[in-house]
Length: 294
Image 1: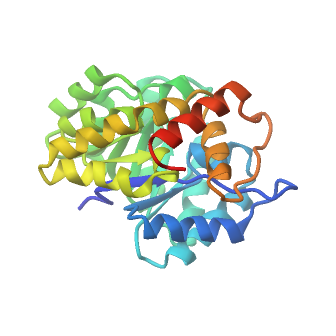
Image 2: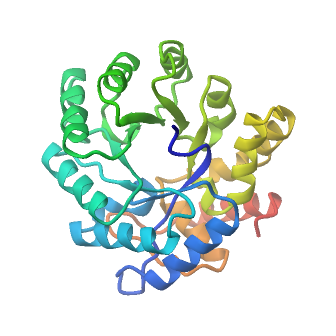
């Protein structure tokens, strides 16, 4: 059974002025996401800035999300690390506080081989009996899960159930779909490729766009899955300029600024991330106005 179908939000983490986590605002954002029709909550993924959080902060955000959601939708915890030992520790902590599943990015910086990727995910899957979504984003990690490796892992470990595909390589994703044989759910990891990946058998998206447009991102996916491809495509194209602007600088720089101008107290970013450049602010604001987000 799939963890979710539809649009899961890659949730940002709001900070106070002193860069501590703003749990009050996080609660408000979560409630607004649920009200907007978001199908799953992904916390401490890339958009949530976990790379600059301590173990304790990551655990506290996951635990807070689990308690706030209270089983209304799945809570998926980002527990990836460049050390397998650390990924296991974070995954165990996520299970302890009640996460429904974990999102495990490929080990960044190490640039391990396919054999190394296999052993990494094998170790996590063996240590923690939660459903696992593998996260393939080579542009950020320097490491690419090839289709053969992903399928092998899914066939051998029953709790490796899905992959977030953010390689941007539609040909590779087509190869993955062709050899899938129903063992692995495929989620788009790129908001500008939702419809193409759904057309290859994907069942949803883990989305940055959902932070600012949860209902339409949900509707985009579900319209496609329910056969209304015309509506789905119109929503994909409606938000294309917003999506481009949300990635004008490295995620989550633009989406945090977007959340702030929407009225959320998203706060700033922890170094080495810095504030969105003025030219990109204008680009994003115009795109959001044209899409009737603000």
